[in-house]
Length: 288
Image (cartoon, rainbow, N blue to C red; front, side, top):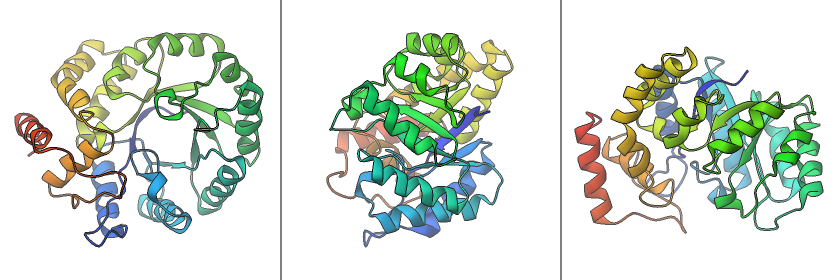
């Protein structure tokens, strides 16, 4: 079962532009100390499009080594070519990942049959698969009928819903035996109210403990307590997306002294006005 907070962890870069593995290890320790259920390396938040294959492999390997079985590792190993997704996923499986996060193939926009064949081919490798529905990034929804069909595969175990729709969560949980994880921090609690089990979170990069507590309360049916945390951190849920993810969250982590503020083009720094807004928000929440 996939439940709780899974942090879509950033990939820290040194000032030279290389992956900063020491900082990555520190970030993972911060997450585990904050009570998260798992780490998701090299997803969208990990700037996966700008990592080469060797870096992609090494970030996953370093995450697994650092975690050392204390929480789950869900490796981001999707692609818009099935052959690439298979190669990345096989490596993650061999390295010891607990599951793979498989994004909808982007740009080429496959039809429903292509989606079923793509995800099924990855699932056939034997690593548990979490489908990742994010049409805003991919230009393609995973139709509910495709989710229902894929749920029949024994290795398709969950879906990350980042389409902004609580309605989709209701449809999935009433038609499939899949764990649903929110892909939008601001919708985690609304989605959990209709059956989601947690979140693959951006915000937990900077606030793992509050997110873990909110989700734990919701899973235990303590909705008043969960709602109080949701409302307290709601501005963080929204303001960490005032620019393209992961620019704001990496900016916030840099302000907190946890990473250098370094991106790889085409990602770059945000505006000074956004930085001021983020700094004031982090101070108001006691995160700075």
